[in-house]
Amino acid sequence: DGTVNNPNFNVVDVDSLGSTFTLKATLSPYYEFRGQKMMLKQADYGEFNGIELDSYLATLTYNAKGPVMMIMNNKVDVLNNNNGFDTYQGTLIDDYYRITDSSNGLPYIMGWGAQAYARLNYPTQEYWRRSKVLRDDSRVLGRTVIVKDRMIGPNACRIVIDISGDNNADYFWQSGTLTVSTSIPSTPVDEFNF
View (spheres, one colour):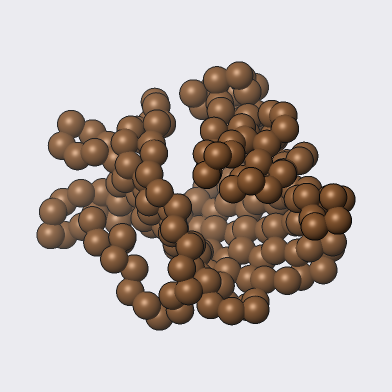
């Protein structure tokens, strides 16, 4: 629910084919001239698409003034083929800004950034990340679209998260789809057409 130091009500359930895991968020107070910090932690045992995940932990920090900037560092242990765990790390730097669409007058929050991944502390992949958010109000249903295109890695990969529902300042409850394809970065993103 976005309250400070209340992980029991700041929960995200991630479901996939026959698998699930839960993340709990702890928000620190907002510090004027610095910003705010949030920690995401895996609640207990979990799987994503049948692959065991353990010890997911992410720290997100937001700046205090100007255009919103976020930096996230995360790690997760993933079960490998030898029944051991490999540690994966990630870093995301994202900027957010508001625009008003001149054709419909609706306000959008746009995001732009880069995300790098490492396995066992060695860089492996880099993604270009874009997002578009429409907050719900009495006129429209909220929608969030996040697109990640692999720029460095073994092959072309696009990940699209497309969710809709409530996402106002007081409440967030959205559901939708996660799609992985071999689209290249220059392929238009149809999901952004809202």
